[in-house]
Amino acid sequence: MKFVSRIKTPVVSDVLSFAVILLLLSVKEAESRKRRVLESFEYNAINCRAHTASLTDFGGVGDGKTSNTKAFQDAITHLSQYAADGGAQLVVPAGKWLTGSFSLTSHFTLFLHKDAVLLASQDLKEWPTLKSLPSYGRGRDAPAGRYSSLIFGTNLTDVIVTGDNGTIDGQGAYWWQQFKKGKLKYTRPYLIEIMYSDTIQISNLTLLNSPSWNVHPVYSSNILIQGITIIAPVTSPNTDGINPDSCTNTKIEDCYIVSGDDCVAVKSGWDEYGIAYGMPTKQLIIRRLTCISPYSATIALGSEMSGGIQDVRAEDITAIHTESGIRIKTAVGRGGYVKDIYVKRMTMHTMKWVFWMTGNYGSHADKNYDPNALPVIQGINYRDMVAENVSMAARLEGISGDPFKEICISNVTIGMAAKAKKVPWTCTDIEGITSGVSPRPCDLLPDQGPERISQCDFPPEGIPIDSVQVKKCTYSMHYM
Image (cartoon, rainbow, N blue to C red; front, side):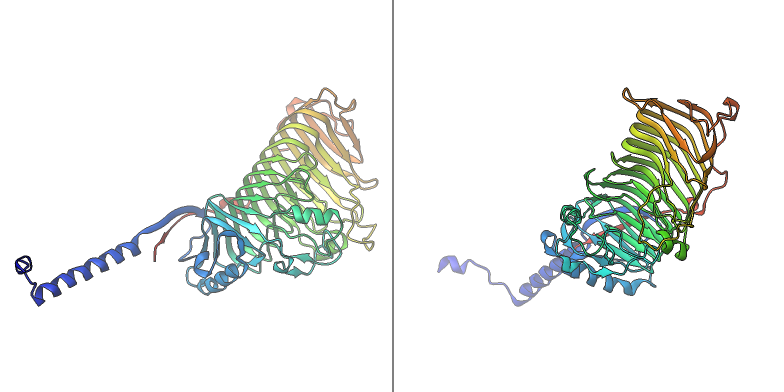
């Protein structure tokens, strides 16, 4: 009793004061938690966004097992309401996010955290089918249509797919096996395809094991592709790196590609379908590309080029253990044209061919192609190149009665391999000139002497995509 009597009993006012203090402290701590930054990041983009959300806000689960297809669709549908209010950005946090195909919206950015991995679903129910592209008339793998790409968009304006080198894994082994067994009714999906769109950026991503082509802008314009790493087994079928297709004003730069097909393949439609559609690829820049592809080309022009390819400029290109450096692929029945092509400062190590042009690439969409539709190949300019360990300098094969014209090759040194072909150049049905080229070219490409070393150069004027300025976008994700 004496112990109890020594305790001072608090009055009511003291209790209330203490409660108020506790309440204020708890509110202050809660506000502090709200302001706590979960993560900040910045990146360069053609446009920044006024609104940001995380995939987890829409039920996304990054365990590598749970399907997030609906979460992506719900998130993008919700964020589309901000298109006219500064646009929106969807952040994919660190984790493994299994998903099937989903479609983007305009004035929108998809941003992948550096530790985010998109895993392409193996469930065919999560891959809608689409009609064949009108400039192709059929699927590339099968006569029917095609599966929608993992990341797809059509009729968009101002769309960005980027990240802090986040990863998109197509888990392509299943598709490659089905393709090789002839079991696919539709053409395999690509990883990223944007069509009928304007103002596109695809940047700072790692793309792995695509079922087929990796990046396919088609029927689009004003396209920026930067800082992309693409890796697939060199024996994987048709895993092209970047395929601009019937596109205008495109820039591809600072990309590293290891693949089972062409690292960059420039296209514009197939046979009579491409001729009828009539939409060329033009105003294309390729810079600082590194390619490894033992069975294909560093840069291929065609073979689907029936809508035309014009004004392609490639510089500072490195090819390592690649079948060919620059390859032009066409055939009787293609129609169209490949002209005004400029390549300079290219370094090549261990090549089968440095230059390869063929007018006998006979793969056709169907039997209805026009045998009188002859392609026009002219104005092909190569200069300032060095190659070593090469099996054959060039294989240049035009079409009888339709020679490839205005070929210009200047200041090129090719070191032949120990077991190189005895005849380093083979040329038929071509016309052109050379200057300062070793080993000595074929007679159809006469040497003009060292005083003409500066020929075959780039046009002095630029193209519009080079004047596009990117902005520094900064975002902070907070605890709620």
